[in-house]
Image (cartoon, rainbow, N blue to C red; front, side):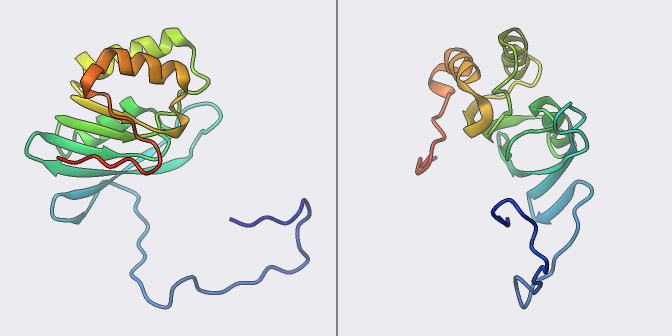
Length: 155
Protein backbone atom coordinates (compact mmCIF):
# COMPACT_ATOMS: atom_id res chain seq x y z
CA UNK A 1 0.00 0.00 0.00
CA UNK A 2 1.35 3.36 -0.91
CA UNK A 3 0.41 6.74 0.49
CA UNK A 4 1.40 9.87 -1.37
CA UNK A 5 0.13 12.71 0.81
CA UNK A 6 -2.71 13.41 -1.61
CA UNK A 7 -0.67 13.75 -4.78
CA UNK A 8 0.71 11.20 -7.16
CA UNK A 9 4.52 11.24 -7.33
CA UNK A 10 6.19 12.14 -10.58
CA UNK A 11 8.16 8.88 -10.56
CA UNK A 12 7.20 5.48 -9.11
CA UNK A 13 10.02 3.30 -7.86
CA UNK A 14 9.81 -0.38 -8.69
CA UNK A 15 11.52 -3.46 -7.47
CA UNK A 16 11.01 -6.98 -6.27
CA UNK A 17 9.35 -7.65 -2.97
CA UNK A 18 10.95 -11.10 -2.80
CA UNK A 19 14.03 -12.50 -4.53
CA UNK A 20 12.58 -15.99 -4.72
CA UNK A 21 9.12 -17.45 -4.78
CA UNK A 22 6.65 -19.24 -6.93
CA UNK A 23 3.88 -16.70 -7.42
CA UNK A 24 0.80 -18.04 -9.15
CA UNK A 25 -2.41 -16.30 -10.13
CA UNK A 26 -5.27 -18.15 -8.45
CA UNK A 27 -8.33 -17.87 -10.68
CA UNK A 28 -10.13 -21.05 -9.65
CA UNK A 29 -10.46 -23.42 -6.71
CA UNK A 30 -6.88 -24.52 -6.03
CA UNK A 31 -5.43 -27.12 -3.68
CA UNK A 32 -2.16 -25.60 -2.43
CA UNK A 33 -1.24 -28.44 -0.05
CA UNK A 34 -3.02 -31.71 0.68
CA UNK A 35 -6.35 -30.75 2.25
CA UNK A 36 -5.72 -26.98 2.05
CA UNK A 37 -7.50 -25.05 -0.67
CA UNK A 38 -7.86 -21.49 -1.91
CA UNK A 39 -11.46 -20.75 -2.82
CA UNK A 40 -11.82 -17.90 -5.30
CA UNK A 41 -14.93 -15.78 -5.43
CA UNK A 42 -15.74 -12.56 -7.25
CA UNK A 43 -18.15 -10.05 -5.76
CA UNK A 44 -21.37 -9.33 -7.59
CA UNK A 45 -22.42 -6.79 -4.96
CA UNK A 46 -22.68 -3.04 -5.40
CA UNK A 47 -19.68 -1.26 -3.90
CA UNK A 48 -17.33 -4.22 -4.39
CA UNK A 49 -18.48 -5.31 -7.86
CA UNK A 50 -16.00 -7.61 -9.60
CA UNK A 51 -13.62 -7.61 -6.63
CA UNK A 52 -11.86 -11.00 -6.47
CA UNK A 53 -11.17 -12.54 -3.08
CA UNK A 54 -9.58 -15.72 -1.77
CA UNK A 55 -10.76 -17.76 1.19
CA UNK A 56 -8.65 -20.49 2.76
CA UNK A 57 -10.48 -23.81 3.19
CA UNK A 58 -8.90 -26.48 5.35
CA UNK A 59 -10.49 -29.91 5.04
CA UNK A 60 -11.08 -31.47 8.46
CA UNK A 61 -12.88 -34.61 9.63
CA UNK A 62 -16.06 -32.68 10.58
CA UNK A 63 -16.08 -30.32 7.61
CA UNK A 64 -14.24 -27.25 6.44
CA UNK A 65 -12.45 -24.61 8.46
CA UNK A 66 -12.89 -21.45 6.39
CA UNK A 67 -10.74 -18.36 6.86
CA UNK A 68 -11.96 -15.40 4.85
CA UNK A 69 -10.96 -11.78 4.65
CA UNK A 70 -14.03 -9.60 4.21
CA UNK A 71 -16.48 -11.85 2.35
CA UNK A 72 -17.04 -9.20 -0.32
CA UNK A 73 -18.82 -11.76 -2.52
CA UNK A 74 -21.01 -12.70 0.43
CA UNK A 75 -20.50 -15.55 2.86
CA UNK A 76 -23.17 -17.61 1.11
CA UNK A 77 -21.33 -17.32 -2.21
CA UNK A 78 -18.15 -18.40 -0.43
CA UNK A 79 -19.91 -21.37 1.19
CA UNK A 80 -21.32 -22.36 -2.19
CA UNK A 81 -17.87 -22.23 -3.83
CA UNK A 82 -16.25 -24.08 -0.90
CA UNK A 83 -18.86 -26.83 -1.07
CA UNK A 84 -16.93 -28.18 -4.07
CA UNK A 85 -14.31 -29.27 -1.51
CA UNK A 86 -16.77 -30.40 1.18
CA UNK A 87 -20.43 -29.42 1.65
CA UNK A 88 -19.96 -29.44 5.44
CA UNK A 89 -18.57 -26.40 7.23
CA UNK A 90 -17.26 -26.79 10.77
CA UNK A 91 -16.32 -23.14 11.34
CA UNK A 92 -16.03 -19.79 9.57
CA UNK A 93 -13.38 -17.27 10.69
CA UNK A 94 -13.24 -13.74 9.33
CA UNK A 95 -15.13 -10.67 8.32
CA UNK A 96 -18.62 -11.04 6.88
CA UNK A 97 -18.90 -7.54 5.34
CA UNK A 98 -22.27 -6.80 6.93
CA UNK A 99 -21.47 -3.48 8.59
CA UNK A 100 -24.00 -1.56 6.43
CA UNK A 101 -26.44 -4.43 5.81
CA UNK A 102 -30.03 -3.90 7.01
CA UNK A 103 -30.91 -5.98 10.07
CA UNK A 104 -33.68 -7.80 8.19
CA UNK A 105 -31.11 -9.13 5.72
CA UNK A 106 -28.74 -10.04 8.56
CA UNK A 107 -31.50 -12.05 10.23
CA UNK A 108 -32.13 -14.01 7.01
CA UNK A 109 -28.41 -14.64 6.60
CA UNK A 110 -27.98 -15.85 10.19
CA UNK A 111 -30.88 -18.27 9.71
CA UNK A 112 -29.37 -19.51 6.43
CA UNK A 113 -25.96 -20.05 8.05
CA UNK A 114 -27.57 -22.21 10.73
CA UNK A 115 -30.16 -24.13 8.68
CA UNK A 116 -29.27 -24.09 4.97
CA UNK A 117 -25.47 -24.18 5.28
CA UNK A 118 -25.33 -25.87 8.70
CA UNK A 119 -22.27 -23.87 9.76
CA UNK A 120 -21.53 -25.34 13.20
CA UNK A 121 -19.39 -22.55 14.68
CA UNK A 122 -18.60 -18.99 13.74
CA UNK A 123 -15.87 -16.48 14.61
CA UNK A 124 -16.83 -13.25 12.81
CA UNK A 125 -14.22 -10.55 12.37
CA UNK A 126 -13.69 -6.86 11.73
CA UNK A 127 -16.16 -5.83 9.00
CA UNK A 128 -19.07 -7.92 10.26
CA UNK A 129 -20.57 -5.00 12.17
CA UNK A 130 -22.21 -4.70 15.57
CA UNK A 131 -25.78 -5.70 14.55
CA UNK A 132 -24.48 -8.90 12.94
CA UNK A 133 -22.13 -9.64 15.85
CA UNK A 134 -25.09 -9.47 18.24
CA UNK A 135 -27.37 -11.65 16.10
CA UNK A 136 -24.69 -14.25 15.43
CA UNK A 137 -23.77 -14.40 19.12
CA UNK A 138 -27.40 -14.94 20.07
CA UNK A 139 -27.96 -17.59 17.37
CA UNK A 140 -24.72 -19.51 17.95
CA UNK A 141 -24.41 -19.20 21.74
CA UNK A 142 -21.37 -21.18 22.91
CA UNK A 143 -20.49 -21.87 19.27
CA UNK A 144 -19.85 -18.15 18.68
CA UNK A 145 -16.17 -17.38 19.11
CA UNK A 146 -14.66 -13.95 19.62
CA UNK A 147 -12.21 -13.36 16.78
CA UNK A 148 -10.43 -10.22 17.93
CA UNK A 149 -6.75 -9.40 17.70
CA UNK A 150 -4.68 -11.87 19.71
CA UNK A 151 -7.46 -14.38 20.24
CA UNK A 152 -6.27 -17.99 20.35
CA UNK A 153 -8.67 -20.82 19.65
CA UNK A 154 -7.49 -24.24 20.68
CA UNK A 155 -8.98 -27.55 19.73
